[in-house]
Amino acid sequence: MNEKLPFDMDAIAKQAVDEIEHIKDEEDLEKWRIKYFGRKGIFATLTSNLSEIEQCLRPVAGMKINNVKKQLTTLYEEKKQSLISRMQVEKGKSVFNLTLPGLSSECANLHPITLVSREIVRIFQGLGFGVHTGPEIETEFYNFEALNTPADHPARDMWDTFYLDGQKKFLLRTHTSPVQIRVLQRLTVPLRIIAIGKTFRRDAFDASHSPVFHQVEGLMVGYDINFSNLKAVLTFFLKELFGSSVNVRFLPSYFPFTEPSAEISISCVICNGKGCQTCGNTGWLEILGAGMVHPEVFRKAGLRDENLTGFAFGAGIDRIAMIKYRIDDIRLFFLNDMRFLRQFR
Ligand code: FA5
Image 1 (cartoon, helix red, strand yellow):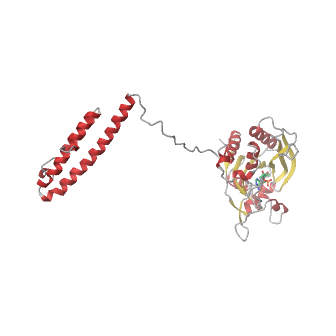
Image 2 (cartoon, protein in one colour):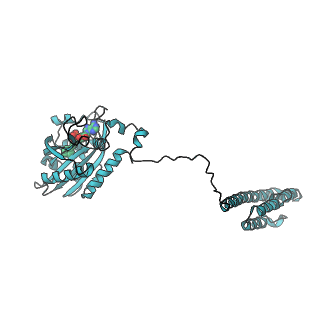
Image 3 (cartoon, protein in one colour):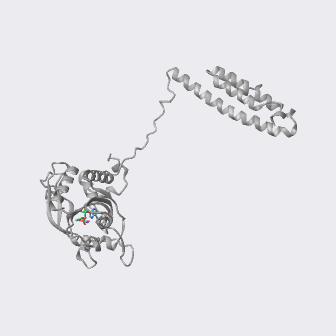
């Protein structure tokens, strides 16, 4: 096609690009602009000569001229901008307009529950515990039956449950303890794990209760695990989490899936055990439920070895976060108020 046109557009474009690349100042750039884009410049001449070209070639010629014109215009604008910037830098002026008001960018931060969860994971990983989650939708078997809490067991009243079907087969897990069974079925003993995640109960949404909250479960199983191991691990954990100066108290308690069972408290971090509103003037804050794994739990998980022993524990992460950060209303964790959430780093 080019042979028939009275001009070689590719050669003109190449020359223009070559020239502009070597330009070092605005004056030469202006000369270049006039040469190609001026009133009597190359493009003006080419366009006005179009009428002299054979009729059938005119559209192609016009398109070629316009394409190259467009490319060179872009090149010209870029070159101009770069020469201006370079000149400003050389003159000691900033390329940026520092007088413009700044745009502040929102900086994300982690939710306090995530921060506490990560801290708990860090402590237990340091003790060689694996980390598991388990499903939030559970079956009645894993949440209750396998945990030695059959349908007619009075202890079921301890957990007001969200059932998902009329037959009460599926439910939102009321605690992380069903992960104990799933882990015992899947892993080989000895084992030590924690399970962290959301749990659900039909509880009121008040200052200390939420229908959705978070728990951490712990399970250590082997052939020589005893109550002293439970005490040592949990005392270490609580002192790591709340500081070495807290005292840890173990009291007898009851859970269907542990025997013996214990309720574990720390000395109140607000009043140092003297008694205040937060600890109900007792000087103690309850943190954990725990105990030695009930033999029935091993059986339900399919483990028949009579010599196996283990301990388990469970704690509410939201309540731990409330104590750690001195928060008196659990609802703050769920309301997405940025003024509250921004305080945690
Ligand atoms: C249990 O859920 C047992 N599974 C714990 C356990 C595990 C014991 C293994 C023995 C061995 P409990 O129902 O007490 O226990 O709940 C544990 C913690 O969850 C409580 O101490 C509390 O911190 C937290 N919790 C319970 N209900 C709520 C709620 N509605 N809102 C916020 N936190 C809650």
